[in-house]
Length: 92
Image 1 (tube, helix red, strand yellow):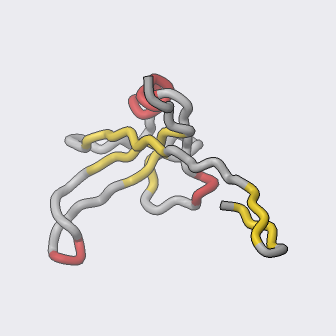
Image 2 (cartoon, rainbow, N blue to C red; image 1 turned 90 degrees about the vertical axis):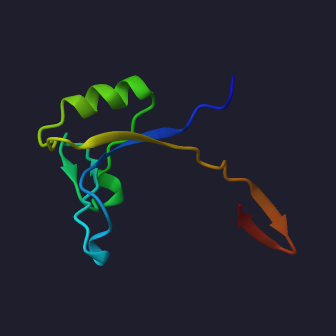
């Protein structure tokens, strides 16, 4: 079995094409208050430990749009390793 993601975000995909080129796509991320928002602050994004938790929260979202597609975005965070090089303390 592979390494599980450290967190999972939920994104709602709606519309088609990049607005910069005349499209109407509008993607939003699920926030901690159960509402999808465009470009929320990092601290407001809802992060889940399992796909089941992410799914359950997504289907309960208060402002889901008709015909939108929900996606789960897994994130694997690299462990920070302290290393000393030439007298400097570095976090890699």
